[in-house]
Image (tube, rainbow, N blue to C red; front, side, top):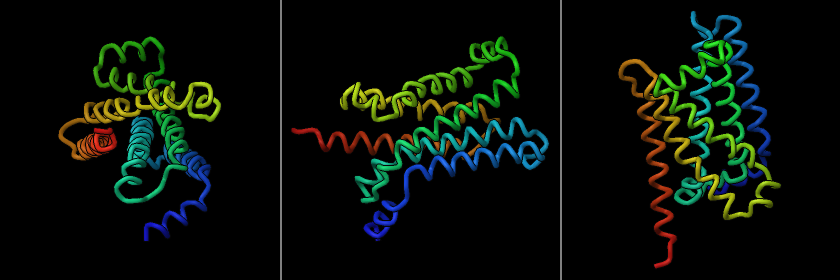
Length: 200
């Protein structure tokens, strides 16, 4: 069954993720404009973009464990997942900064004043070099070892993103806890695999 699924996935171009991601972002924005996101569309849109970005980040982290432990090969989609993740986090930040806060001075004040915003902003800033180097030219210029080392920033980015979400929600909500636990589980699986592959 896995072989059949892998064969099917090989026929799907990676750029499909960009198309679907952009279309979903546009649909959410349309819902916000037309009242489909409830009485507070800006807050709802901001949260929707952030949640999609976090889910895509988790999907990207799951690529290697799925290949190692289940035989499911999604490697061809990993770069597209990463770039689309960054796109959604930029959209999340933009809605917050330009539609919600609406002032550069207040944006900076919020970043400094509110720890959950500080954590989220740190995660966002750490994503920028990964997005900039997510291309073959950067890989060639940096070399494989340096490129892979830089892209390990994905791990703290994911943890900080989950903590940001957990911190900003009001009251006890299970969803952000699940995201954090899944991320920690995926990172633990990666660490365990790395230990197994280190020569004795």
